[in-house]
Image (cartoon, rainbow, N blue to C red; front, side, top):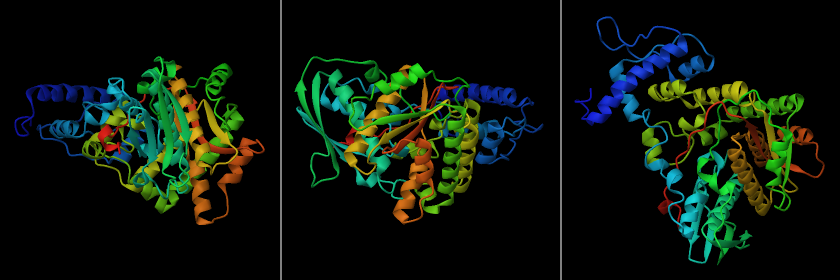
Amino acid sequence: MCARHSFPVHLCRRLAEWNQVFLQEMTMATNIEPRAVRSGGSPRPPVASRRSALKVFGAGAATVLVAGTGVVSYRAFDNGVLDPGAGAPYDAWSRWQDDDSPMGAVGAAILAANPHNTQPWLFHVTATSVDLFADPARDMPFVDPLRREHHVGLGCAVENLVLALVARGHRPTVNLMPDPADQSHVASLVLVRAPASTSPLYDAIGARHSNRGPYLAQNVPAAVLDELTDHVTDLPGIGTRWFTSTAEKAALSAVIIAATEAFIADPRQSQDAFGWFRNNRDDIDEHRDGPTLDAQGLSPVTLTLAKLLPASSRTAGDAFWLDQTRTVHTATAAAYGVITVADTDDPATRLNAGRALQRIHLAATTLDLGLQHMNQITERVDRERRLGLPATFEPRLRDLLAQPGRKPLVTFRLGYPVRAARPSPRRPLAAVIR
């Protein structure tokens, strides 16, 4: 196999070692004997789809059939099984501190949380300023029809940018939506030299990832939630509402699940989201954006199997997402957080909410907490508004919030994760500079 595909010798050796590890993990996970080849030594053909195999492992079932070692080895090499989260699409996560100029600060800004990893930003950099622009080519017109998440993600980038500029010896003055005639110009940061200063939030930039895996059955202490809230009290108009009781979490979980069902039942929303999913390493290398299998919070064995099997269809992927929402995301949330504002339509307010969300996520990272954005409800709220449909999800979420005069902008879950999150790919700086 290695000679036929001209693999380097060290990769041949790693593939051989990996095959043994893979079969051992499969055996331990399922309590069955490995059945990788027939008695005559010929490869056993694949017999499972990606979705069915993921369902088996997600449910802890006891049997699964594995492709032959030759096929497994090649797909392992070709689809990045051996080195998940490595290579050029992930370089930004390890090199964000290399450059101490304002351009280096942009290298930190692009690691910010953002909707569906669309990375909706463009930057203009000089020695005395950094300007941030929305990239309209990276809108999701059906998932995010009113650009709520688009602005929130840009606000997350503003926060990383501020932290990184301060660490590089600048005191930035932030002006949001500085040009009424250009709504794509979302922030202008004017720089003045100052002593460099780092912080725990800055140090956490390279370690912050959305954790979509299961969380431990362990409550987050109220004092910890208060600590997270303390990081955003200086941002005008921004509030935080925590859902921590069993009854509160159950009620919000039910609305999240219902919104997920409505989302996948809407062909336009489903197709819009699926178009950004990067199914294999070739997609990741080409686009360097979008959700990936590596970032789904799957166990190592399940992730490996998902990469080896054929890609799921859109409908199968939707079904798996709904299942994960029911059995993992909502079932293991230790707490929910909601960023609240007075006006969900104001772009500057959305940008400040993004700054708040990024601070909370960075602070959670310093406390070994996992955080995952859960925006299905507000995606359906905005979709219903765009289509002129009767409001079904907005009043349900408003009633749960129970804060007169406040509106929910974004929702997330929080908890102590079972496993560490993996990074998402990032486009190079050259692709985001104008």
